Amino acid sequence: MGNLLCRRGLYAASAEPPTPQPAQRPAVQPIVSDAITSVACTDNPHRIVAGSEDKSVVLYDWKEQYVVQRWQEHTRGVKKVHFTNQLVYSGSRDGTIRCWAPAEANSVMKIDAHKMVVSSLASDPSQAPLLASGSRDCAVALWDVTTGQSISTQCITRNLVTAMSWFANSSTFLQTSEDLHLRIWDTRTMQAVHDFKTEHHFALCCDTSVDGNYFVVGNNGFSSTNQHDGCESQVWDVRKGSVLCQYQGHSQSVNSCALLSTDSKLLVASGSKDQTLHLWDATSAKPVASCCADNNLTVSSIAVQHIQDGLELWLGNTNGTAQIWSLDLSQHTDELLKLQHLSLIHISEPTRLLSISYAVFCLKKKKKKNYNHY
Image (tube, rainbow, N blue to C red; front, side, top):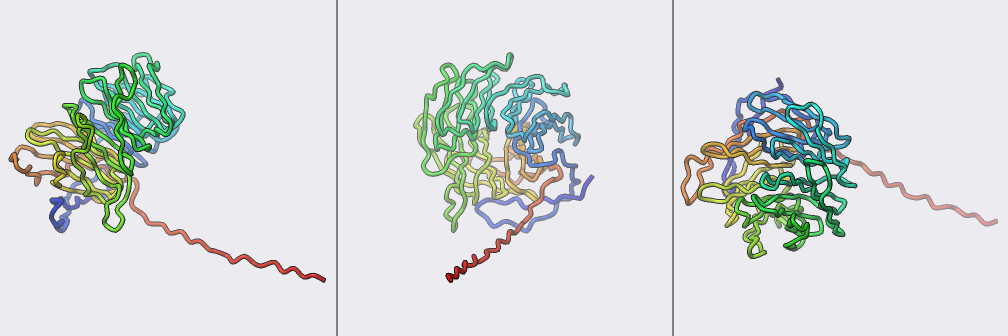
C-alpha cells in the first residue's frame, strides 16, 4: 500500500471553493503504469474496464481493490475500451480492435481494423452483433463481431474521428471529427443521415441521451484571458438540429463528457484538461457542482453506473488513476439537486505526477565570413 491520498474540496460551481480538508483513506496501488485513456462500466457494479497508454487493458474490481485481468496483447497504447454483451473491446494506436472475455487470459478475437489509431468504439445491445469503430485514417467502419468481418467502411476526406456514441435502442450512432462536423450514421445504409457543423472548434468527446433526442459534445481549446474560447461543452437537440445550450465553465479542452438521466433533470458530467469534473444542467447550462482529486491531470474518460438512490461516475485520468465518484440522488427537489453528497469513494494510486520542465534554447550569433581579396 502506498501513502495516504487526500480529497480536494467539493464545491458549488458558482461559489468560492472551501479550504480542502484531507480525507484519510488508504491509497490503492496503481492499476496501470501510464495514463488511463478510457474507462467503461461492466455488468458488475464493482468492476471497471480501463485502457492505458502502457498498452494494457485492465479489468479492475475497485471494491476488493485488485486487478481481475490484465490483457497486454496490443503493441501500442490503448485509446478506447468498450463493454457490451459481457465482452470487452479495445481499440489501439496499433490500428487493431481486440475482444476479451473476462474469464479468458488472452484475446478471443483480433480485427485489423484501421491504418491508424482506433480512436473510438460504439455499440448497443439491441443491435448485436454490430460494433462501430472510427479512426484518424478518416474511416468509419461497421463490424460483425461474431465473425470479425467488415460490414461496411466509409471514408470521408478530413474526417479524423475523435469520438462515437450509439443512440440507445436504435440503428444510429453519433460520430465527431476534427473537420468540425457532427455526423449521425444509420447502420442500415451506413450513410450519414444528419450532418451538423460546429463553428470554430472540433469536438473531442460525445454522449447521447437515452431517449435519443439530445447529445452532448466537449470541445477542444483553451481559455485566453478568461474568454473560454473553444473549451465549451454543448448540448444539441437532434430534432431541431441546433444547440440547446452551451456550458463555458472549463478553462481548457473538454476531453470527456456524459449525459446523466435523473428522475427530474438531465445533467451533464464533463471532464477537462483543467483537471476538474463539472456537473451542470443539460437544458440551461446552469452549473451545479465541481470537484477534483489530488494530483489530477486531464480527466480523460467518464463512464456512468446507475446504483440505488444515485449514480456513480467512473473516471479515468491521465495521471494513471481510476476514480469513483458517488452522486447521491436520494435527497433532491425538482428545483435543485442537493449534491452535497457527491463524494470520492475510491481512487487508485497515480503513476504520473504533474511536473514542470523547462527548455533552454541558446541562439548563437552567426559569424560573418571574412573574405579578403588580395
